[in-house]
Image (cartoon, rainbow, N blue to C red):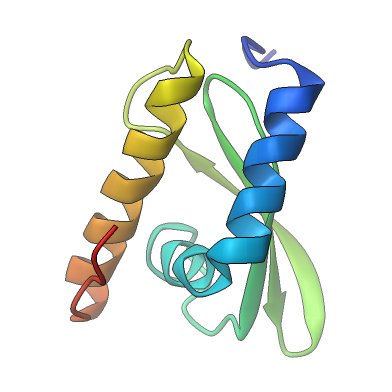
Length: 101
């Protein structure tokens, strides 16, 4: 069972922020790290200490995508650093220039 160090309010805040402010970053992460290179949209649906959960749109249908963190997370501040790391890794894999954070 995945670890769950984050309260529902933290999960809600992070997913709202990612989906509201960084939908393009989420799509890049899902394409490169979530094994859905053909995705046309993506949104974060949840997270826990082991990874992030996403819904990626492929051929007009959403599919669940789970992407593990590079190491277990236990504190909220670690989430941002890990998502930025994932974004930068995803850009490198896709040959994109990361935008500044």
